[in-house]
Length: 141
Image (cartoon, rainbow, N blue to C red; front, side, top):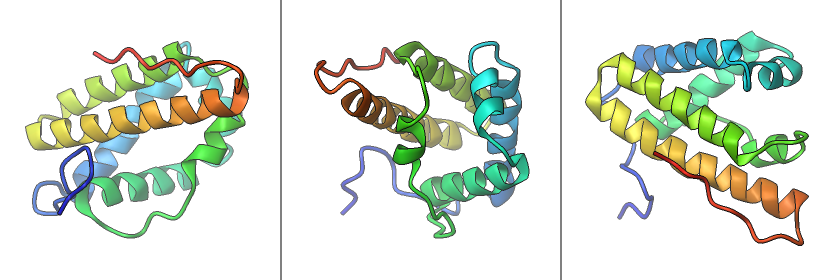
């Protein structure tokens, strides 16, 4: 039984090409974004490797592949000065991207996963960096 808060991965609904297009299109937007771009540019050393890693991650989430190896939380909690607004902007750009791709199943599934992940990373970031404060939830449209 699927205990996940979002749909089970389904390789028949999304192709690897669609997953790769999602990743590349989203990061093209994020890198140009005035608030997110400088953060990504300061912390992503090898964009080709990042694209492979992120494509593997989203392929695992959407198609059920098992190529992803990594731990996103530790990489995010060490970044300086992240805010709820930055996570919300990330989600906004991500949702714009999935809408533009024109696959409603992909849009719904990827957006649900992205919202869950953004909330989990933001909560972990706050707990790690502001242990004396009560975590604040993201405002997600």
